[in-house]
Image 1 (tube, rainbow, N blue to C red):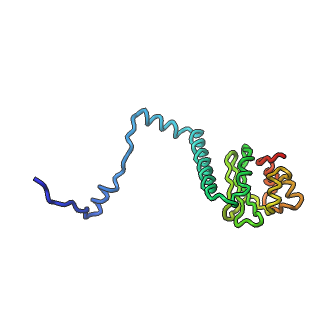
Image 2: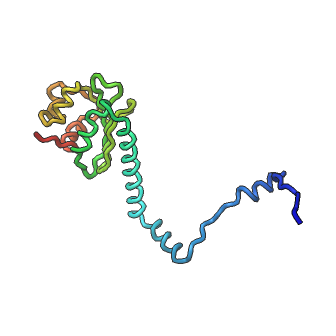
Amino acid sequence: TISQKTKGLPTSNQAVRRTVLHERSVELTPQESEQLSQYVSDDKYVEQQNADIAELSELYKQFMSEGAGGPDNEFVQDLRSHFTAQKGFVASYMFLIEGKEQPLIVKVNEDVLYVGYGPETETDVTAKLSPEAFAAIVAGRKTFMGAFNMGDMPAKGNFRMIGMLDNVFTFDN
């Protein structure tokens, strides 16, 4: 026999909770459970996982900003290709380049680098310069500190971070 009865929606909140909101637990073998607890209790492993996630998210952000292409990505690849990681160094920079709609944002977290044009944010150093001055820096004809000292790059913020730019980004002649 074929039943003609149609199923209806549950009429009480209790029935909805029983059928929809039940938790699905992952069944682990004792060995899998022991292995998982070893990873979770290992602080170095957890720190490395967090660092890897941060690095991947920065790479993804860079990949997404590269998709825009065009002249607004001027200097971005120059900075990425001349990046030298500095152990224990964390800083953020905002370069206000004449003629650009948005500032060039540079964030360094030891060996993780983010470079891209974006809205103004609070950074350790904010510097203003012309496209010609920035081009001279990335061509290796001038250093960041030299541009600052000559007045080509007025800046505000943590001045020790300006000197570190020449260590983090090495542009040789």
